[in-house]
Length: 360
Image (cartoon, rainbow, N blue to C red):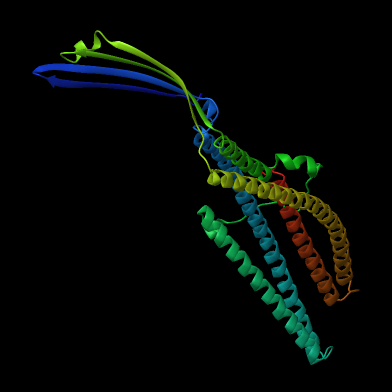
């Protein structure tokens, strides 16, 4: 923690002079304490500090990636629910188109319509069949994709989800919540890393001033253990000062660090602005879609009343079957539009919660 260095050295040597063998036993211990550069072990701890910061960044990043993954999968499930609704509605439209074609055929046989009217009904039936086939294909592809991801049979990939459920979104101050969002936390952690590196870069520009204290002992003897007796002790104390000239590389690294911090600050401001705009936009979009759903519900109710009225007229021989079929078709188209609006609403809810980190 202090940045100090302790070194212990021991040596033993044998000398032979005029047939007399002697041994020299030397032991020394040295302690060096940095006073300016690397004081308190600042530079020694750099790699460990940076590693801890990177672990924190990865932890936040994993949560953010998980939320993005879940958000995308929920949207995919919403697409599947919408595809189920579309396939069901287009099948109903095809049945109605077939009924209308049969009605036109009978009218043509009794010369109540001309050939062009009959051909128009045939074209309408073909378009209805094409729409149903396209919706069926879209539903099948989505089922295959999602079934493969969860390792189940395609036939088992049926989602029960209330597409028309309404949600109350939290009223938040987008400026206040920004600082706590994970996208901002990631930048803050990156900034911590750069600031920690900059701290060491600045420290390395200081002179190297080290307080050194040493103790050494030296003794002689005919064998190794005799060398530990009759030892002489020597104390040493001093200050080592060094300062390399022309630290161009260190200065350039420090300038580069300042540039990186400036870029990171600019990126943070850009992300904050974009995120705030996204939050405000999603809130407005959710409110608009919810209001549109309410209007669509009123329109569907009116269309259902029209269908019931035409059914009563037809049952009492006061109405035409063609008008009944037309009102039923119009009702289906309104239900389709309602389903598409509801799917967009649900996706925006998911995106909003994901943006403000409330999806998980």
